[in-house]
Length: 266
Image: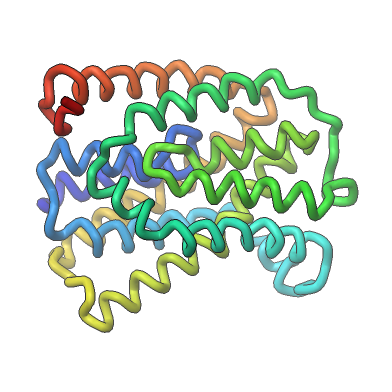
C-alpha cells in the first residue's frame, strides 16, 4: 500500500463509517480495486481506531457525562444496545469473515441498505428523547447494529433507521446511533490489536501509509458525523438510498457478467 492509496482509503473509511452507505463495504470494494491483500488487516485496525476518535471529538461532552454517571439511564441504554451487537458478532464471526474475504454479498447488501434507508425516511417519529426511550428500543437498535456487521450493510444506516422506526427524536436517534457504536468498535479493535501483538496477524504496512490513513480517516470521520447530524434532523436520508442502489446494481452487474473486480457468480 502506498501513501496515496492510504490517503484515499482513510477518507473512504472516515466518510462511509458515519454516512449511511457502509464503510466496510466501501473498504472491501476499494481494496479489491487497488489489488490490496497482505497488508489490509493492520490498516483496517488503524483507520477504525481513527474514526472512533472522531466520535470522541464530536460527543466528548456526552461521553464525559456517561462516564460520570455509569449507572445513569443513558449509560445503561448504551450497554443494552451494545450487548446484542457483540453477541451477534461473536456467534457469527466465521460467517462474517467469510463474506468479507469473498465479497460475494456486497451488491445485494448495498441494495438492502438502500431499501432500509428508503423506508426509514417515511417513519413517523414520536419525538422520543432520553426519558421516553426504552431498553427494548435500545436492544432492537443493537440487533440492527449486529446485522450491520455484514460487509456492505451500513451500521449508521441501520441503527438510525431502527431508532426512527421506534419513534426516537431525529437528533437523539443520531446521537444514540453514534454513541452505541463505541463499545463494539472499541472491543473489536482491541481484539484485533491483540492479534497483532500475539502474531496471529502480521503488521505488514509501513508507518507512513498508516499515519496518513489514520489522519485522513479521523478528519473525514469528524466532518461526516457533523454532516450526518444535520442531515438526519432535516429528514434527508432517502438521497443516500439512490447512491447505494446504484452502487449495488453496478457490483451485481460485475459479479454476474464482467468479473472485473469480483469473481463471477457463474
